[in-house]
Structure formats: structure tokens, C-alpha cells
Length: 351
Image 1: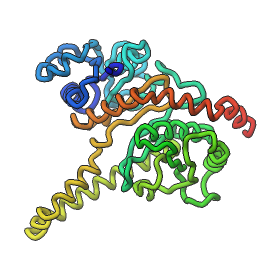
Image 2: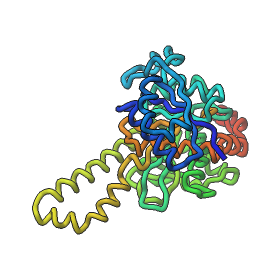
Image 3: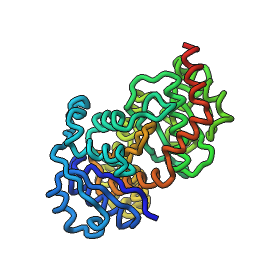
Image 4: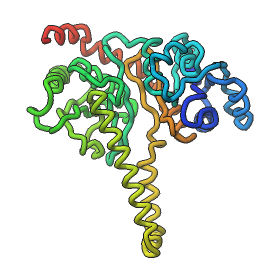
């Protein structure tokens, strides 16, 4: 059974067409059910497809004369949505010409375009940016929000928890993902009023939701593997994510320097190479590539701008899995169980 085709913004990312096409081709070789709508400069896309006949046979090209630049403001990009590869890829999802869109372009512009074109689903006030982080456990960690919303109230945090749990059930296979709120301490008395209120709401609604709410967690415990979903506002989430990424690069660079410091160290590297290769694989962001905009009436995935072809292929595979597992419908069903309308009214009444 073939999946709905995936719209690829072929012009996004640091290297644009070459990496995006190579990534899509790699994904297609792994999964021959994938079909694509490649959006961007038609001549450049056709040239890149010459060495990928398997992808060419499964793709249609949609010409886009313009490109959203990396430093372009979202408001500027919105004005050119009808002519840019990013805007036309998202519009293909809106029109039903594609089941999902993948872009490695400007994150702010992608969020603005996706939110305007696809709108947020009923019961969700704001979409959130979510990603998978590696852990010491058996599965990755779903974390949100990672920068879409710098300020969030308790209602937003509860909605993020519902969306993150639905995503985690697909990513980890757990029927009841373990969910926690990011806080400055694990004690029940810690945190802002919004975090405290969100925790109270999640405890009260625990029986209605397919999740196990476990209270709070701290940023230094993100990689332990004892939690499946971590919920926070976009300001704290973005800082935490970049701290994790920076620490991973620091460890990798430190090991590289240590092994190159002497002949004995180089010999030690040869002995320990299997372990270091495993560490490199675990920390490589290309193996966890693909941030998802949750809460929209459609699937939009953001690939890292510097992702390799492998990273793009993994983002495409993630997108296909979300389509296959009906992520959007799962979130809607969970919101219905929560009683989103009653929740929204009670939250407003409490203000």
C-alpha cells in the first residue's frame, strides 16, 4: 500500500537541491512505497534527478520561482508564500495534493506559513515544535515546545502534553508514555504558577489520557531514559535543546583531541574504536533529524538546515511514519477524551 505523497521543499537547507534530492532518493531506496512532490527550481531538480532514476519514477516536480532565505523574516516570507518552494510545498498539503511537507529552510517562516495555511486543529490554541532527543534508555525522548512559543500558560502546556504523548506513542510504541514538565526542581512546590497549574490539570485528567503523568523533571535528567515526553515553553525548550546539542559536540570534540594527543592515545583509539563509533552514531543529529509542528491540520516536518542526505532521509521516513500512524487523528481523539471545550472554559474561568 502506497502512502500519500510527501511534498519536499527542494530548495531549503544549507546545500539545497543536492542534499534534499539525495536524501529523498535514499528514503525511496529504503521504502519503495514513498512518493514525492518535489518543489523548487524545475531545471535544477531535473538535473539532480538524473542520477536517481528510482526517485524520478516516483516523483512529480512543481516549479517554484522563489526561495525563502535563511535570514528572511516570517512576515516577509508570508507575502511570497505563493511563489516560494516552501510556501507551495505547504499549500500542496492544504489542497490535498500531498499528505505532508518536509523543509530544511527557515524555521520561523515555515511555522508562520504552516500555521496560516493549515490552521491549528480544534482544541489547540498554538502549534508546538517537537523533536526526538537521544537517551540512555530504549527509546528517544519527545520534547516540546522547542521555540515556536516563547511564553505559554497552563492551557498551552497541557495541550502540548496531549500532543507530545500522541507523538511518543508512534515514536516509542508505548501505550502510556511517561510525561513530565520541565522545571527547576522535581519537588511539587517548585516552578511558576503556570507550571503548577498545568501539573494540577494533568493529574486531574490522567485517567482520561493515554499517558502517565509523572510530575516534574530537570534539564540535567533529559538523557536518562526514564521519561518519554518532556513539556515546556518554547523559550526554555530552545535553550535546553541547544545546551544538549552543544554538550554533545563538546564531548565529541574532546574525545577527538584526546585520542590525537599522543601515540599511546592513538593506539587506545584503535582499541576502543567500536565504542567510539557507537557513541558517534548515538550523538549524530542526522540520526534523530526531523522536528514536527504538532497541532496543525496537517503534517509538517522541519529538517535541520545542515542535515546530510542521511539526515534528510530520516526526516522523510519520520514524516511517512506519522502519516501511516495517523498522528493528526490521534491527537484529535485524545483531545476529545480530554474534553477540550470544557477544559478551555475551566481554564478561562480560573484566570
